[in-house]
Length: 401
Ligand code: NDP
Image (cartoon, rainbow, N blue to C red; front, side):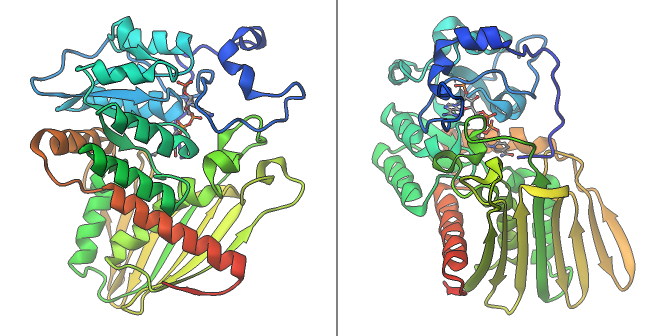
């Protein structure tokens, strides 16, 4: 998350009177307002960013894959719906939401009929909806397993947001559910479809900096005041350990796809400041050192508590350095290659294409039975590494993998 361009255009901000009258929010807060957001699917108010289209998208191309977007939050409305609408071989076919008013407004903006609106309670009837080929799961992480399994049970393919789940065991369950249903499972690792990151991978494969010695990644920002009653990102049952799963996963992924290697060991430290409601259940900061078989070492930091934030991936080799900053956001990427004291700024394309290209890739996988670039196994791989990182920090020692 983070590095968003926030926009309130066309968004209603619900008044406290409206919130009090909204039954779908009742389970969200205790009388004292301090209970954690529950780890079950419930409707939420309008997010504070994202835009709806002024006019519905044009009719999908022939053979286009229909997606149901599950969870109309910031990313669902801000990026997923526009990505599907902009795709060439995919389109928005339905929405799944616990907030009926929001769902109705979003469905109308995307030209969907009312019977293409699903709640979490009546979701199972989607099995009979031939307009929907796949579900794009944009729920909080702690709900990915349950709702991915439900989607497979309904006979749909699943594109699931990162991080895949809360544990490697959950990831394995999702992969098993995919196999049992014969439906595809893809993890929405958008950087694999983004021109700067694709060019960086290519450069590293070509040996542009020579033998890689060090990789440095930083994915950090300072989260504003919040608590477990207000924000699922600080609720352990919904977000796991916090910044590493949410944002640091981009640094972890970068280290893997830029080095082209899997680590042989990890050594990590976590911070969890006392008496800060943001960090009652999650870590504020995770720093990790990963060693690779080639001898290269990656140092990664991720934090919800540093300012100004950073989004960096930097690779130093015997023959040069590749600097990506910002490296993995929605846009505004910058990338330079420095060799023999000469700096070359690279602009390999428009980062904005990453969202629609990723959805088109899933559509191709479904229609043509093509291999998925970012399958469930990749999500499982990353979650297993994240577990090793937390184990290293908890046990205060380097973990050999
Ligand atoms: P938001 O909090 O903005 O939205 C989550 C939505 O999920 C809610 O609006 C609600 O939709 C639904 N929901 C159902 N149950 C709950 C619950 N118990 N608590 C909170 N929300 C619930 O989250 P984001 O959109 O930012 O993130 C959603 C997913 O997308 C996460 O997995 C996150 O990691 C991922 N993400 C990926 C990004 C990327 O760059 N790839 C960037 C940002 C997020 P409704 O009201 O319609 O039911």
